[in-house]
Length: 145
Image 1: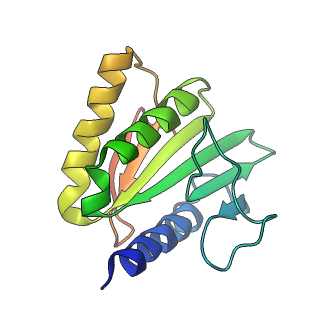
Image 2: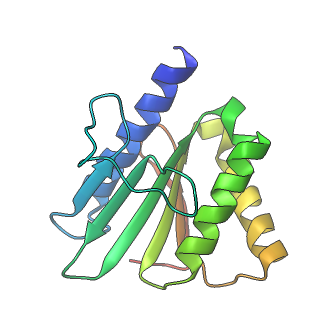
Protein backbone atom coordinates (compact mmCIF):
# COMPACT_ATOMS: atom_id res chain seq x y z
CA UNK A 1 0.00 0.00 0.00
CA UNK A 2 1.43 3.40 -0.94
CA UNK A 3 2.03 6.07 1.69
CA UNK A 4 -0.88 8.21 0.46
CA UNK A 5 -3.34 5.30 0.28
CA UNK A 6 -2.29 4.20 3.79
CA UNK A 7 -2.86 7.75 5.04
CA UNK A 8 -6.30 7.82 3.43
CA UNK A 9 -7.17 4.45 5.01
CA UNK A 10 -6.20 5.89 8.41
CA UNK A 11 -8.44 8.93 7.80
CA UNK A 12 -11.31 6.58 6.92
CA UNK A 13 -10.61 4.48 10.04
CA UNK A 14 -10.75 7.66 12.11
CA UNK A 15 -14.05 8.72 10.53
CA UNK A 16 -15.53 5.24 11.05
CA UNK A 17 -14.28 5.10 14.65
CA UNK A 18 -16.04 8.39 15.42
CA UNK A 19 -19.32 6.95 14.15
CA UNK A 20 -18.90 3.45 15.60
CA UNK A 21 -17.75 4.56 19.05
CA UNK A 22 -20.49 7.20 19.31
CA UNK A 23 -17.91 9.30 21.16
CA UNK A 24 -19.75 12.40 19.92
CA UNK A 25 -23.24 10.98 20.11
CA UNK A 26 -25.46 9.80 17.30
CA UNK A 27 -24.98 12.31 14.50
CA UNK A 28 -21.88 14.46 14.71
CA UNK A 29 -21.09 16.93 11.96
CA UNK A 30 -17.96 15.71 10.16
CA UNK A 31 -15.43 17.78 8.25
CA UNK A 32 -12.90 15.59 6.44
CA UNK A 33 -9.82 16.50 4.43
CA UNK A 34 -9.66 13.96 1.64
CA UNK A 35 -9.49 14.08 -2.17
CA UNK A 36 -13.30 14.08 -2.48
CA UNK A 37 -13.86 16.98 -0.06
CA UNK A 38 -15.02 20.37 -1.21
CA UNK A 39 -14.32 23.61 0.65
CA UNK A 40 -17.51 23.33 2.73
CA UNK A 41 -16.79 19.78 3.91
CA UNK A 42 -13.11 20.33 4.75
CA UNK A 43 -12.04 21.26 8.29
CA UNK A 44 -10.72 24.73 9.02
CA UNK A 45 -7.10 25.21 9.97
CA UNK A 46 -6.28 25.00 13.65
CA UNK A 47 -3.26 26.99 14.81
CA UNK A 48 -2.04 27.07 11.20
CA UNK A 49 -2.49 23.35 10.47
CA UNK A 50 -5.21 21.52 8.57
CA UNK A 51 -6.41 18.47 10.54
CA UNK A 52 -7.61 15.38 8.69
CA UNK A 53 -10.93 15.29 10.56
CA UNK A 54 -12.93 17.64 12.74
CA UNK A 55 -16.16 16.34 14.22
CA UNK A 56 -18.62 18.37 16.24
CA UNK A 57 -21.75 17.77 18.23
CA UNK A 58 -23.42 21.13 18.75
CA UNK A 59 -25.97 19.76 21.23
CA UNK A 60 -23.28 18.27 23.50
CA UNK A 61 -20.92 21.18 22.74
CA UNK A 62 -18.10 18.73 21.99
CA UNK A 63 -15.43 18.79 19.32
CA UNK A 64 -12.96 16.18 18.13
CA UNK A 65 -9.79 16.98 16.20
CA UNK A 66 -8.53 13.94 14.32
CA UNK A 67 -5.17 13.41 12.68
CA UNK A 68 -3.95 10.37 10.75
CA UNK A 69 -0.23 9.61 10.68
CA UNK A 70 1.60 6.86 8.88
CA UNK A 71 4.69 5.39 10.54
CA UNK A 72 7.11 7.50 8.50
CA UNK A 73 5.06 10.68 8.90
CA UNK A 74 4.61 10.35 12.67
CA UNK A 75 8.32 10.88 13.33
CA UNK A 76 8.84 14.03 11.24
CA UNK A 77 9.48 17.43 12.79
CA UNK A 78 6.55 18.91 10.88
CA UNK A 79 4.16 16.28 12.27
CA UNK A 80 5.42 16.77 15.81
CA UNK A 81 4.78 20.52 15.54
CA UNK A 82 1.34 19.88 14.08
CA UNK A 83 0.43 17.43 16.85
CA UNK A 84 1.74 19.86 19.47
CA UNK A 85 -0.46 22.62 18.11
CA UNK A 86 -3.50 20.32 18.11
CA UNK A 87 -2.67 19.31 21.71
CA UNK A 88 -2.53 22.96 22.80
CA UNK A 89 -5.83 23.68 21.04
CA UNK A 90 -7.60 20.65 22.52
CA UNK A 91 -6.25 21.15 26.03
CA UNK A 92 -7.71 24.68 26.10
CA UNK A 93 -11.22 23.24 26.45
CA UNK A 94 -12.37 20.10 28.34
CA UNK A 95 -15.01 19.52 25.64
CA UNK A 96 -12.36 18.88 22.98
CA UNK A 97 -10.68 15.59 22.22
CA UNK A 98 -7.62 14.87 20.11
CA UNK A 99 -7.79 11.58 18.22
CA UNK A 100 -4.69 10.23 16.48
CA UNK A 101 -4.87 7.32 14.06
CA UNK A 102 -1.71 5.42 13.21
CA UNK A 103 -0.58 1.94 12.28
CA UNK A 104 -0.76 -0.58 15.11
CA UNK A 105 2.99 -0.87 15.60
CA UNK A 106 3.35 2.90 16.15
CA UNK A 107 0.53 3.37 18.66
CA UNK A 108 2.94 3.21 21.59
CA UNK A 109 5.25 5.77 19.96
CA UNK A 110 2.27 8.09 19.36
CA UNK A 111 1.22 7.78 22.99
CA UNK A 112 4.73 8.54 24.25
CA UNK A 113 4.93 11.53 21.88
CA UNK A 114 1.64 12.95 23.20
CA UNK A 115 2.72 12.45 26.81
CA UNK A 116 6.12 14.09 26.17
CA UNK A 117 4.51 17.11 24.52
CA UNK A 118 2.01 17.45 27.36
CA UNK A 119 4.80 17.22 29.94
CA UNK A 120 7.00 19.77 28.17
CA UNK A 121 4.08 22.21 27.87
CA UNK A 122 2.84 21.43 31.42
CA UNK A 123 -0.56 20.33 30.14
CA UNK A 124 -2.33 17.73 32.24
CA UNK A 125 -5.89 18.14 31.03
CA UNK A 126 -5.74 16.76 27.49
CA UNK A 127 -8.47 14.34 26.47
CA UNK A 128 -7.10 12.11 23.73
CA UNK A 129 -7.50 8.81 21.96
CA UNK A 130 -5.11 6.85 19.80
CA UNK A 131 -6.55 4.31 17.43
CA UNK A 132 -4.98 1.88 15.00
CA UNK A 133 -5.85 1.21 11.38
CA UNK A 134 -8.31 -1.49 12.49
CA UNK A 135 -10.35 1.10 14.43
CA UNK A 136 -9.29 -0.31 17.79
CA UNK A 137 -9.11 2.27 20.54
CA UNK A 138 -5.70 1.53 21.96
CA UNK A 139 -5.37 4.53 24.27
CA UNK A 140 -8.10 6.70 25.75
CA UNK A 141 -6.69 9.18 28.24
CA UNK A 142 -8.67 11.23 30.74
CA UNK A 143 -11.83 9.19 30.05
CA UNK A 144 -13.79 11.65 27.92
CA UNK A 145 -16.71 9.28 27.45
